[in-house]
Length: 149
Length: 149
Length: 149
Length: 149
Image (cartoon, rainbow over all chains, first blue to last red; front, side):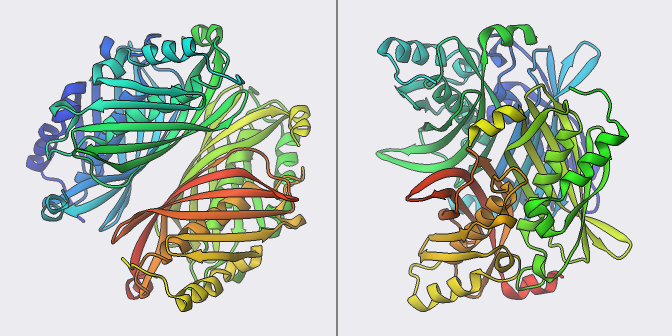
């Protein structure tokens, strides 16, 4: 378990955050501290359902990935983070012009990390809580991860 | 609660399935029966993480949306389905060329529907279970849904 | 949705809390406010596992029931609260002389209420967080509940 | 990961199952196979709520503990099983004279095991599904577990 987060590591994680599916979705790192990761999304038409609400899958993806990166802020740099499972409650419909997700590590184990995420719907100046997630992460050596596939 | 699913309704739900974010992700309806919905995704680079594994968010989105449509197969046609919450366990890394998701309604209430989803990683001829989800849905009148926003 | 909680209602809920299985387990109401319910347990041998740790089932029971009563504090007095589902993460082993559980309603719908619970292990002067739960509740008329069985 | 379950080990697990809080609740092992554990409870007044329904905490305790023992059937004998988290959906009210819980390991990792549980309400000859749970377990060496407290 790391006791600090260097500026260099924070910048690395912020850059590393938006690749593959997350880049495709347009979700970006917004704030990185030890034990905390915040991400942001400008909502476009492709993030919505037919009825104009933001799709639950967008919020779930954001909650999962941001929780994962909150895990990266508390482990040694040679470890990878896997999502074991998560649970997400949708508190109210989201239909604003953006989303913000804030994830905090609430349990920092050597192997198992638990993170809590809040997703907010950005409506002008307001940020309305729209989802809450609880995620279980596992820290594994990058070496081991590769040998799995 | 509906006791049957007409061919017309099944075709309508299959078409309706792939809109907005789900269309953007490329997830398509594959099989529709009363109480069961199956979807399919051809995995492309944008569905993966940096390490080549399929992103947990893709599987979560698929599990959520497919569960929702399994709910549509058991309610009256004038009702909408909302996801209240879901929980998903990732059983092993997914890295194949496609995903299949099968959702079954395991509790058909007038208001609350519970659905169970299995996600399979398609690797050639094989379909390997990679995720399992339990989703709580709510049936609301389309009228009411509109007045919420 | 109620906007206030009378002292009389708070006392009623505190008394009502410890019946049936909850009385059997020895869990008691500790603090009642609008949107918040706190309970307390003096841990005895029967709450432990063979290895001396407090059983996960005790914490789950406490989290579920206390969440339910946080729901009672935000609904009209003629409504009953049912647990639709909950998810609980065990953050670290609990082995102290007591447990405290604090549940807050984080979504107050007319039908669906979401509550978040924290369970603390009491070790002398310290209260260590040992579990976190997210619970979905449903408010139903007492009338309807009876006709279900 | 064990490939078989000896009769001796099965009997040991069945006996070991009902200790501490589980003994207090009266929950007993009923059937033990590799990857499967089934438990049973004769429902008494102390398992109910004020309204006569069986308390959600009883079903959650049963689902958690039985899932844990399904984990014991697939790991080496010197390992202990901890519950990392679980999620449980209550499908319908339970009010019968007994409960049966059946847990199956659906992911057998070296460290992380996932188990699925079904709880049935025994009403005369019938067994009605009343709850479904998804549990994440961790296998740890008995040695390590002790040094934690």
